[in-house]
Length: 344
Image (cartoon, rainbow, N blue to C red; front, side, top):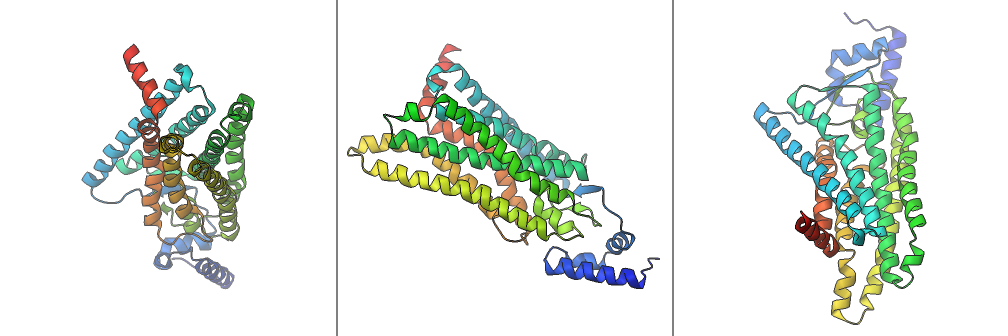
């Protein structure tokens, strides 16, 4: 029997009212006896159960096959780009240096998600400790922030190449390339440090089931029984600083790029200039479209299932698409690939 004192009753009432006012306390949890028991006893959840994609086993096995195949292709294709740039002297330029950074990032980004997701869907590794959950959240968000910065740096690089072609080599020096890449990596990880710290201070009283195949910030907020407003505010501010700021840099760069391309007299010249940035523009559109939907919002998203679908696209599909987009839409990469196969 669960006994609640008068003091506990007031505490629980304030907590439920607070959580419902922030829209992060599921109403169905009110009828769950375990939820009230956790809250009354002040017990904190130390382990979560990742739900993944619920359904019949055949359905989940098909997801496992798709995830495993896409993970293998992602690692191989991104590693191939790094190896190709390293061995091809004609690709030793700032654009391909940043592309190697992006490919290296994509390998680790998918590695932080897919192996665990496969274990969740197979039912062999559905539990995740609170500390590992926070670590995964910090790792994925940091890599995502780094990708935003890298994409804006690559847009700035294309701006210098197209708008100042004669001064490009002196403007985008090797030293500047290294500084921009290091700044992107450091900025990405530092930007998420405060958010990860605030999330680690949340209290989770139950239930312990996360409706996702990874530790996502919205899922954690929905399960927390403490005040989530600081985390929601930090998430929104970090999203503005990282996503919106980098997106503005990218948009401004492309405004100047398009303006410069339109001033080129010949159609062949315009086509050649646009071909140097079309692959990057495709990647930027895909990445920012899904990222803005997921994270640039003032409060936790109501539909966690919709977040799960978009997160699948962001963490599984996009890292696989990037190398193919750069390969199929880039003449230099295709020529280097052709030479590499001929040498073999």
